[in-house]
Length: 240
Figure 1 (cartoon, rainbow, N blue to C red):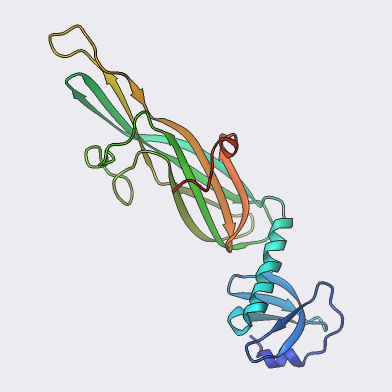
Figure 2 (figure 1 turned 180 degrees about the vertical axis):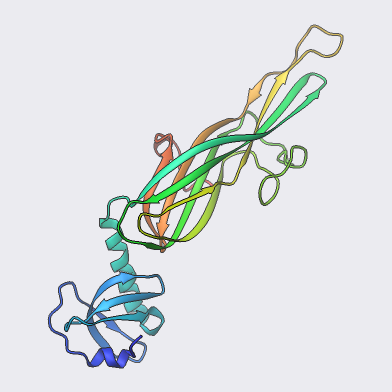
């Protein structure tokens, strides 16, 4: 990277969309931002020369100006990713007890993000919520101790929010990963041994769907839900 002083001395000759950038030593230039990389930016001077500038060398105000430029560029873009979701059930377990049959299975999604743009994206993060309508409130141990473990610990019942850091997706690249899993349970009453009468009630957890948000360098660029109605029926902010 050329020293900032060298950039400062270059002749400015009327750039379209130029903004003012000031370094931590108080030196100011006018330049057009071409690309934002998260920790650095590519700029073009009035004479056509291009340089890469580390954002750490700029003042807070100039860094914020670069971040705002990046945000505006993303907001003007069409949704850059094709999102594919495939639900998968596994790990079925059954526990027959006096008076009831208690079964569980785990659910996760295979997610695929395909970059449909002729440009790469750095700093990609995916947040997603797995919505579950529980038949009854989960017990205190959340069933994880009795019915197996998922990746990173015991599976959990109920709606949960997760995050996946991808970092970079090249142009036209396709990235796939499995989500974390949640546990679904079902309870079916049955007659006690030697009795014809069934007491209690049947209940079952229901997988309502998945809501996905995709961020690029902290800027929300796209949302996707299956079913799509989740974004109208549910609230993102109230989930953990």
